[in-house]
Length: 336
Image: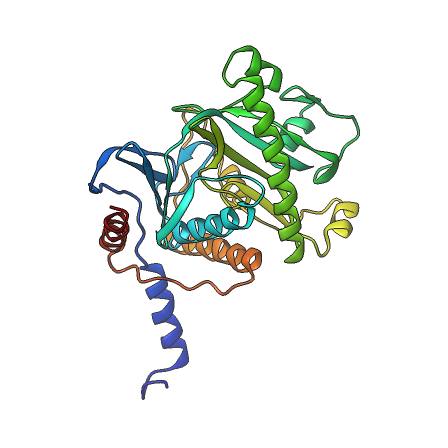
């Protein structure tokens, strides 16, 4: 019911202002019971508990071109964590993963694994950075030969795996399967397991996306080892690690050479490119207004609703850190 003497326009303005003021979690500094250490990544903060469990907090930070952007995106952490949790559960029958519980909308707790220093990127279509390199004349990517005559957003006959080394700082570097094994970064046996798991996960993700009218274009997976067993770790199939096209209209747009309608972080990268930023020395990140951050938030929520088929429910963001601390500590206490 609308209050007297208040116009719909005024209500809309109030709603927009409330959204613009939505709080974000861009830094964490928890001290959980049994905590041994903490690692602050580009987007996630990972707390080591008794050298046995990992508490992974999905913050509202956003990165592009391996640079953390100066402002957080409202509800982004919740979107990422909840999508990842759903896909970890939906793929646990084909690939073992680290997840034990999600005690908070922005937190996943799981088994501590020794992570491999390689990210497994798998691509079903020629787009994004691969297309930028291809259009500049590149015909081999991470040891995979690419044919001449391909067009932007064209489907590969079979998905290709293009791994990168995980850099502690700066840009991750492309590397071939052969180099990874030859340099001893990952053993041949473990790499073949990761490769097999990567294809199985991408196939399942593609099937789930198709049910929702989407195309899983490309994505990345990370793996680790615990007690001699390879596990899927981190997150999967979120807008930070994956790119989706809308299936409806894909063929028509491809034939006409038009941009695809997509749900991914690529629109953030394109916005940065348009403002002359690609993470290179001397370049300045363009101003991120509240309105722009809200538009990015809406895109993340849109992907959540499309890929899960569920309405996104915004959680109370009054005291994000306090809520997370309480929920995680209660969960850890139950495990004692």
